[in-house]
Length: 166
Image (cartoon, rainbow, N blue to C red; front, side):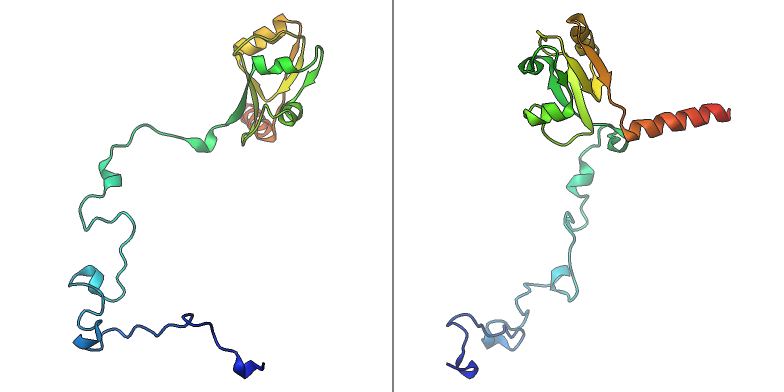
């Protein structure tokens, strides 16, 4: 077998559709574009959501509220009751929680929530604590330490700079 013997598989090659070549071709007159109007014209493309000049659905539905996601911080929530898997006196941080699969998913850090009861004395290091979680951990003799992220530190530095400028 030589290169000149190679042929494409049967059915792999198709003839080009010849549009507008007379009525008997099957693709004559309107050349497969239907009737008249915007879509029959050359270069026409209608954007997604366009309803022919009618007010589009996306603009007919009322807007509600304001969602300023640019300046929000999303935490991975962890309930107090799930911290009971750690031993008494253990140091619990974000890495330990992720290793056990308790803090999965995207987020700026871990927030400990006060759902449930903690039964052991733990040293918890997280990015945020709810007020009830903090009181329940400290009631058992544990400690709560807040991790300061780079983003938070920048905010603190900017506030100090603004205060000293006054």
